[in-house]
Image 1: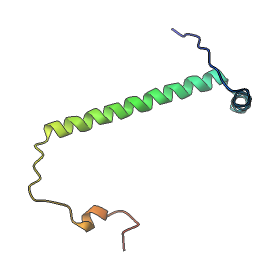
Image 2 (image 1 turned 180 degrees about the vertical axis):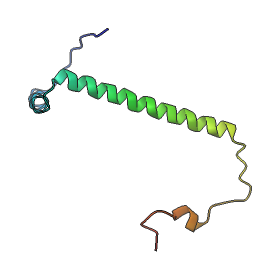
Image 3 (image 1 turned 120 degrees about the horizontal axis):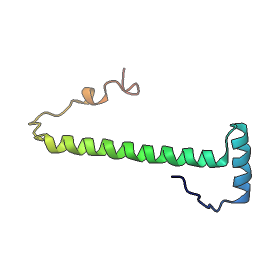
Image 4 (image 1 turned 45 degrees about the horizontal axis):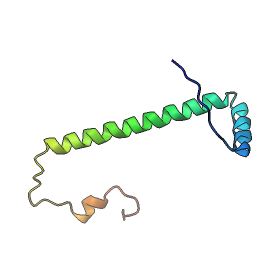
Length: 83
């Protein structure tokens, strides 16, 4: 089900968005809908990643013993530190 929504937007911004929408051969409505859809998808993706990390933390025993990465291991692959 689609519902109508009323937004308050500055006149100058609305004029610019209308021009942009026309250039993209779409509507302001479709641009707003697409933006909100992407925003929700990004947040959902972040939430899923966060949940997966928390699950890994819960499932790990957390015991690394005395092991710590060396400086070389820490910075390997970073072109700023490769010599």
